[in-house]
Length: 249
Image (tube, rainbow, N blue to C red):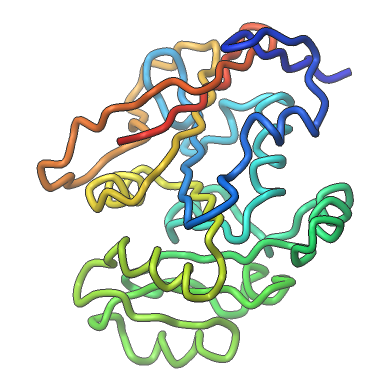
């Protein structure tokens, strides 16, 4: 039986069901909202053996799936798609039923950021995608790779040599994809923070010490925008693991 997830702050409650967890992590009713989801060890490692999945347990995976359930779009960097071995983005049957009852498409869209377009158009990311993916890139990306991806994805230029997070957010909003759930990686998170477009952080604090040379959840050039203030919104607990929800800015 999976470890129950309890709320310990601001109002304690035991063994939250899926509806209660969705309510605790819900998107605002109006406007565009971008939240970022990460896991970290107690000593700040964002990965184990090169992937974040090694740090998570059943409770983290449960919340991870619920965070996707309510999203219009999942935004991920190409490196994370490769390192975490993503397939075509599909949610489970319970999530499909919940989304359809809420008047949403059965599955969220997948949006990825890739400056070099070094993603395989024949991969399951595209072949098995229930919704046509969006690929955000830059004008300096190789033309041949752009042309190879155009039959299987919407390829959108959002900068010259670096993808502009504000243009990404604006494009997603224009598509009606205003509930944006970002899953990294650390350089994408750093760019999003630097652009000031992140509204919330969902951070699982895994009860482990990793040492080694694993990176942190946020990296890269921040253009003087950090540190970013964070306000604690909710604290959940599953055994020795904490699942934290912060509002940013």
